[in-house]
Image (cartoon, rainbow, N blue to C red; front, side):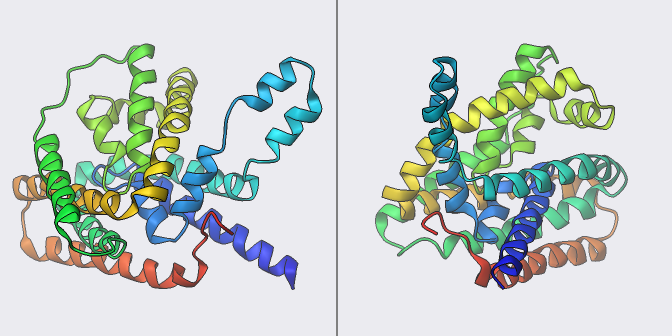
Length: 291
């Protein structure tokens, strides 16, 4: 019976990885939001924050006992199936997203709109109360997102240092509910280039981006873990504001590319309902870092 539970939990973590990876390649939708909806967010952030270079330093000194001790602190039961799911989804969805954003622009962004709107409602449930401080952080998040989304894409090149820095910045956004790492890449003029790199398997670009992402997430996760442990309510209020503010992006894309309103409304409704269904399905399988 215990083995069945382990296999079930491993599969559910893999499924969460698929959802997170799919979200991470969508401009406007955050993998962090999917992690929160599926109940794995706090465990994930805490697990990442526990990773450091101590095991490598110990190994270089020849202290393999200490190295093994440090390595055993890593949550491999979480990381292995989750990363497999994320990797598979990113490789698959990069091809699908290229097609959808080109051919079905309005309905695709309408679907994103519904996803983000429902996700904002879900994150709001994690705000303890609507007091003045939480409202202030919500408004700050909203204003920041509105201004941020209104920025014009940076005309950056695609050199390896730029790709490396893009990976560092985008991964921080990917783990935050409300901020889309794919949208960050859009602003940095790297989104379509990295999609093409994935589709064409340009390993140098992919590895450079990946190294930047690893360094970025290891640094940022410690800050985020501290905020979630000590200032969770105001952090969530800020994220709700961010998510509502980022609706400006899909709204602009919809209004400039829409041919018919009915498919747009249907796509938005499907996105909204999908989040609610996912929340209900994963509600009993929430994986907290205290487990």
